[in-house]
Length: 468
Image (cartoon, rainbow, N blue to C red; front, side, top):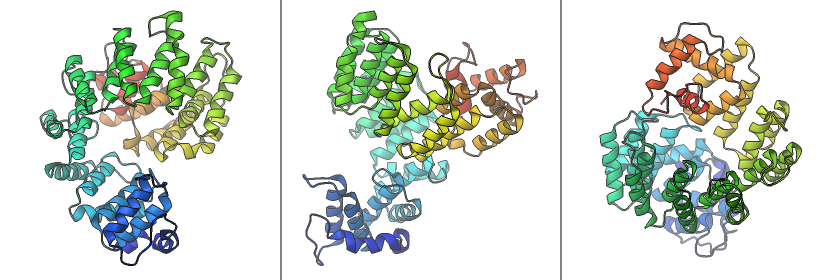
């Protein structure tokens, strides 16, 4: 029942909170009225001051009164953890009930939650069924998610034909996120033949709908590949004009490293782009300033000042700075910042509130890897990672490799032995047998990450670790 799903605490809070809202209370209000008022408060619509607690209480009353859309909305809020800390025990039953009753948004949200997992166990087959159901009823969000995943093959088995069909349906319905998704697949050659031209066509179509993410991706590719600094800067500025603050951070980073015209001409652009990014609320700029301080880019290098900058930013609530600081102290930089894993652990606990539960777990496991110098510790690490396959992303593999290469090699050896592709010792060393197994695993990946270069390159190790 809905009352059970919401829990007594939420229901008891409704009476106390409902009349705190800057909206009239009335016994005659319908459930739909309550839901509309709740949305106004939760999202701060129509110049109404945002009051999430009061809005959620109103939404709870509307759900209790039987409003299907209220159940769907409240279920999404309680499971995604964006507006409030996630409460899966209350939110999931609401999503389930709304989805079973045919609510399209609930079906899509439930499918997405089961696809990614995390707070709830992942269930890809059921996720695919739910998303397919929503897609068949016209949900462009479901079509986009399902299409991208089927072409990418990251979680669901790759089916490019079906994936294209879903994405093309969403694009035909005018969904810019589908254009961005398909454009990204073409830009990086994931599941489809790489095509800058096709990617740009899709990104420019999305830009016509004021979605600048694709232009940011395209400009970033041009800049880092050093193919055309002038065009890269133009696309990135166009993306920034559409509110894509990440494009401003990319411009600042490119300027810092000399990718916007080279040398001092490029570095002179840093302050303007960094200032614009900071004004737009982009939090990566504090990390870039710390990197400049660490390596002495346009200022005197100083490890202590680097750490101070990052800690000040993290204390102010910057998650980018917190992540960078934890990883930096975990590994050191071999120059002016010494490794201090005890402090890294303390800071992870201190800044846990800035990270998602998944990120907290992932950074915690990298710290465990850093200390895994015995066979017993590495065996425990391998078992822990095997129990949480949904968290085994490529970036985590790279971070584990940075934290302790031998520990990650041990993890891979354990996996290869279970797969029957490696019969050597579990010693954490990249001997001939291990390299052969890594090469075999790399060649089996659906999208070649550059196996012919070196399977010990960090990004390739990360791809092998992810195993897609």
